[in-house]
Length: 362
Image 1: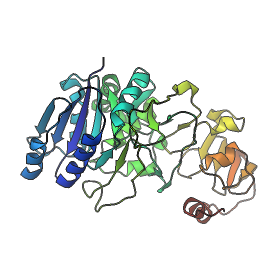
Image 2 (image 1 turned 180 degrees about the vertical axis):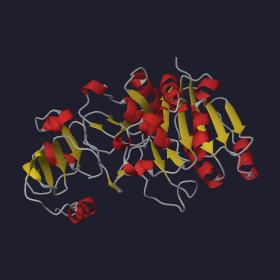
Image 3 (image 1 turned 45 degrees about the horizontal axis):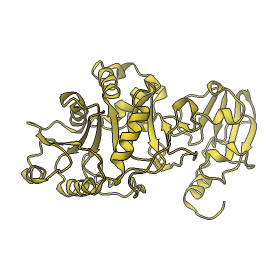
Image 4 (image 1 turned 30 degrees about the vertical axis):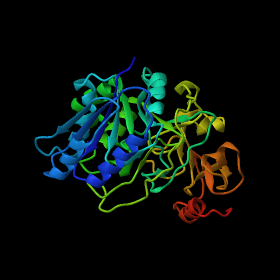
């Protein structure tokens, strides 16, 4: 039987912490689970006193206050290592501006049981991205009959690690293997993140080691993105719908059987297969953010190469236009070895923006 820990990461936001604790109290637990409240040192006694007074009735509670300010990156790395310090089999890590579904613990347990031993999995997400942070545009995943899909993108807005998953990443990090990562494979936006970010290292780890996070189609956590280290002011941009039911039986899919796998650019890794090409010969770059191209290229950019096929931009998710061969001149399949007349190399931004935000048919 696995031993689970919930780790809450806090600093100086008492209102955020209260809101997260409220959601934790509303959640369903079918067994005892330890709560670790880890506070970075902000000099704010009010936050410490509140956390100290909070009663956790579902298991043991441990409050840890850093002796000096760690900073977000070091603090989260310390929180991940609680899996070893307290001998947990798995931890659920929650930053203080999150809110969890009442079924998050049930989902976590089932997902750990199913994916915990899979070496291709770097972690399990409670959150579901509806926004491509690299392109600053909306994102939707192709829907399957399962409750989960895969992305080569680590998570910080509600993440689950088994002991092995965490230790493999942490060893890679402390060995500074990130210094050997091919930067051409890393999204430019990611490279611009501040030094306070631990997440950018975990995403680089996933890319370097070809590992993936498990994502739910319906989120078990959402992000209030309160003003703090990474946001100058409050924003609802990262809010997503969360599951309201409890004790759901989830349907998972093995990685090798999945038809829905995305890379770190939020691009569909299996789209080449849908058009009868070898994935190693195709670069899928519909968002237009990649720095390297294979021979065949799927993109909205207008480029001076031979167009083998074009597709419309009418279905959501955008991948479906290629999968279902929707006619149009918005998405192009190029053979980059064959030059054609030079064209204006601009992204189809106006068309894409309208399609993303307008509820009317394009």
